[in-house]
Image (tube, rainbow, N blue to C red; front, side, top):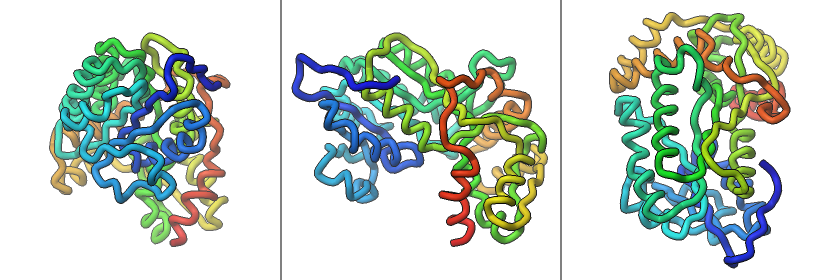
Length: 310
C-alpha cells in the first residue's frame, strides 16, 4: 500500500509501535519519524527501556514504559490509537501457543475496548500449505493472527520467510571457521528477506489505512536462495571461502535443550525448521507486489561484512 491518507475530521491520528528497539521496530520507527508528521500522524511507542530508543525519537514520540504483554500498559497505549504495529518478541521460556496467543490476548481485549481500527502484525509464511498445522512457532503465529482478526479490527499479517539477519548469529563461526549452519537441504531454495524491507511494508500499511478486512501480506525478498547460494554469495562478498554445514534436527534439539530453554519451545523451533525443509515458505508466488528490493549481496556488503570483520 502506498500514498498518504487524507484526514478531514481530526488534526492528528495516532500510530502505536510495539517493540520499537527490535530488529523490525527500529527501522520502522526511523521510517515513520520521517514520514508520519507530514501525513498528520503522531507516534506512540511501548518500550521496556526507553533509554534504548534512538536519539532521533526523543521528544518526537510519546513513550509508554513497560511491556506490551501487560494489560495496564496496553490500556494506556491504545487509548486514542488509530493503528497499531504488533510484534510478539520470541520467548524461549514459554511454550509456543502461550508465547504467541497468550501474549497477544490482552492486546485483543484492549484493541476492542479502545476501538482501534487497524493493526499490522509480524507473522510468517505457511498458511494454506500442507505443513502449516505442524510448523511449531509458525503454526503458533498463524493462530495468533486469527486471534487478532477475531477482535474485529482491520488486520494485515506480514507473512515473512526467514530473515537475512538470522545469519548475524553465525558471525563468529563465519569469521573463525568460514562456516554457517542450518538444518535444511543445501540445495533447497526459499525466499529470504531483509528486516528493513519488512519495516518499509509495515510503514506503508500504517500510513495508508484505506484497507479493510483481514489478509496476509507476503514479503518475499527479491529471489529464492538455497544455503549453497548463500555460501557462494558470502564467499564473493567477504573475499574468503564460506561453506554451509547441515545440522541434524536431533542435534539442534539437544543443543537448544542444553541452553535451558523451555522444551515445548525447543520442539516448536525444531518443528518449524523441519517444516521449512518441507516447503513451508513455498506457498506464495513472488510477484511485483510480494517481492521486496534488498538483495542478499547488498545485505552482505552493508551488514554482514562489517559484523564479521569487527
